[in-house]
Image (cartoon, rainbow, N blue to C red; front, side, top):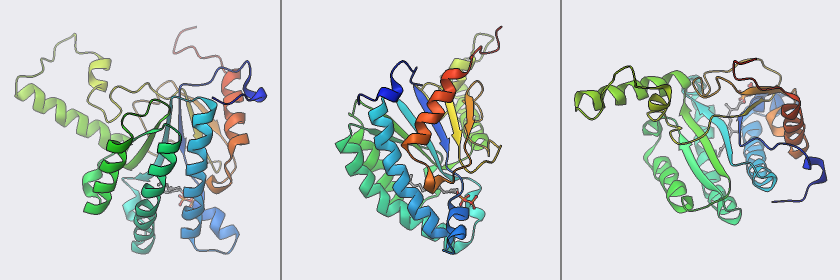
Length: 242
Ligand code: FPP
């Protein structure tokens, strides 16, 4: 972990989640096609993984592609798929060099076969890393995740593997979510100034602190990540208590 005087005396959140917004606007401001914003956004994802690992986060989760993003133009969806293909290979290298374990959440079944294979490979080849866990949400929607969890639970009940009684707890239900075994995010960062959850981690964000920055995602950097951690340190987390 890096000796960073700015971080001394700060509580480092265990899990930071990020809604990476503003790629399109970043590109438009420069008179470039939207896909240039996504490409720059990918570079920033790579850098942020390295920064998060050095800072000592245990989990970093990013929203890369939502269940609603399929509604974008065929050209934009196609460009995003190409970027996934290219960056999955680069990410394997970044993860290996930084002792990072990569995990994908969301319903990967809708992706082209080669992308599914790339995702599986990334997970398989990094599964023994002991540093940061980098979670990428792809074809992810919070409602869809809860729906899939409910179906999996019903299947277990039908097969007699699970008894649902009063004692079936929130913790028990959360084991059916894509994030089973992970702590909930302590801090949610959203870029580009929007004040929405956009169907991201609806169950898991119940008590997370929220930090909004006006920076577009391609302009996000380590200094802003540290600003978010500083803001988090000023919050008084009560989890519904007093
Ligand atoms: C939001 O900007 C961004 C996205 C929908 C895609 C985010 C994806 C990446 C940064 C690539 C991630 C890649 C990997 C490999 C993890 P927007 O297009 O909604 O921007 P706008 O709101 O300005 O239009």
